[in-house]
Image (cartoon, rainbow, N blue to C red; front, side, top):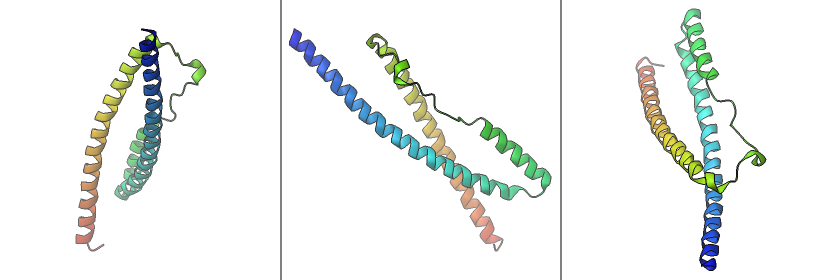
Length: 135
């Protein structure tokens, strides 16, 4: 029975090590995507200024963008390892929290994909209109 228990503990350690490797890969992908999103956000913001036909419209656009940017997250919620509970009795709830967060993120990615598709369509409309106008 003792060797079976040691085998289970060894398997759990292996799973946790492989989870940490997956988490690092996830984190690297997250950072890369975040950088890409900020770059496309900057580019989209510059294009949106084309709609500023007068001072009033420019002020409206600026206000909307200021409100959008004020709601953006500025930092990650980071807790040093010394403040994190390593109590295995709470592992089930932590895993459930992770599953819920990943499911929510997955839905958010679907929403982002739909928004990207919408933006691409608007970009094509602008390009066609500019071609038709002879620009």
